[in-house]
Image 1 (spheres, rainbow, N blue to C red):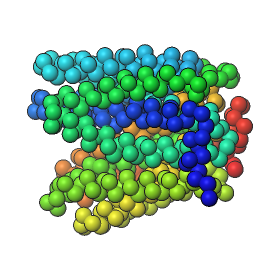
Image 2 (image 1 turned 120 degrees about the vertical axis):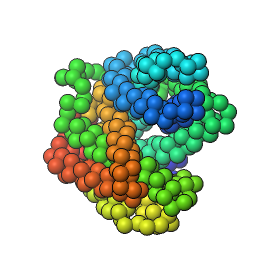
Image 3 (image 1 turned 90 degrees about the horizontal axis):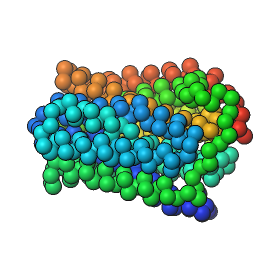
Image 4 (image 1 turned 45 degrees about the horizontal axis):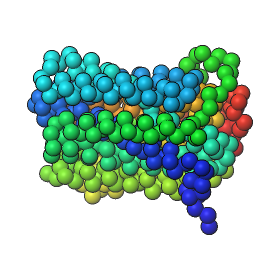
Length: 403
């Protein structure tokens, strides 16, 4: 039997841009907690560290889609390099301001500038789309990238925190910045697989988020992201409440492992139902698996439930990307993918913040109520938005959503 994952890498240049993209994407997973660790180590103020980190995350969520919109108009290399230079300069300023005790307002200013970091996840998926548009291999490629995202978000924070604690406070963000610069330089140099700038469609001057289908998917992913963010914070609090803080990493690893395994399997099969239906079913599974979180009473039980909950993560992201590829004009694909990724990021920030407040007030287990609320919200949006998700592909995209 042919390995579908080996098959997608037979295309010339696929291994190179995927590897370069991995290097360039790792910094995003390192930056948020890297900034928190750097400032908490250097200033001893967790409130300040969290606020600066949240400023970076929010700035990136707002700026990255605009960067991707420029990419769709002018090409990846022409936009990614200047955006990365702005990010590198801002991160250098943030690290120097931390090292030399600059006023707090300068930290926020540099954090906003660092938000210009381009969405390399969208860039990589756009290259896969250009290679395999309208073929079964594209689904497999999206599944592979979802697994890569899991690996990145498992390892990135660990590396960043370890460097800042073991070496010096700025070490985590410094390594992340260097990886970003090197990764983007390598990625942008691979011109053979860079997607061409597609001819303009009618209304191209308007942001792709004006499409009802994109709004449905992005809002759903905000709610799904809240499930992720809540799981991370509440798992740590739950483990601490049970006197085994170190077990939090094992529980979160179980969550990621469930997503990784199911993602690999899901990417290799070819369901006969439409993407819109697959998306609703994946969201339904995500919502359903939040319910047992309210009754778990031990660390092994939570690890098992999180493993099962992780099974819904990859199918949700894979089908969301598939819908974006079919519903968004090719000339705006990068922006469309970026809205999905930033939706997840915004949701994670909201989920972690909301669950943290509830945990402080009512205890660790109560934090999972945010997961249930987010899962219910995601399912409601996905079901109410089915008429947009079942629409036919726009001009320039050959396949309809119903497959």
